[in-house]
Image (cartoon, rainbow, N blue to C red):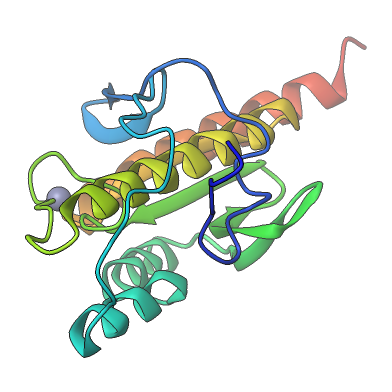
Length: 193
Ligand SMILES: [Zn+2]
């Protein structure tokens, strides 16, 4: 393990690794992902050739926010009357954020890029450094899964959509979950009288 190097910024992010593997799951007929199993092909960071300009540009996209599919979903949700916070810190983990957060309902919504998060339909490994990219995507998926686990243990529900998901469909799933959670919270907090 002594030669194991994380990319900058990743060192602490895999602190809590979920053991079980990730699959897609239907959620109310709309595609929302829930991790249950996560394969990790490489135990060590594979070697890679020095990134060229194009690759570096892609790398810098990792930290990007306000992506087009996410903005689109936010627009639809807003139009349907929902109000939310964006880029809210994950409770108890200030290094991670929630794309779209409904604090009262404790509902976290993510729009995951097909490339970075390894969409089964649209992710293709770059020909250069393909082993490294596979390792990278698996690492990102593990980070996603551990974020989900942290949120759920704090009482939040998590919905993850691929960027290719129709925003209207995703919004419908969000609205359904949001309303159910607000309803549940109201009935629990009012209690028996
Ligand atoms: Zn996709």
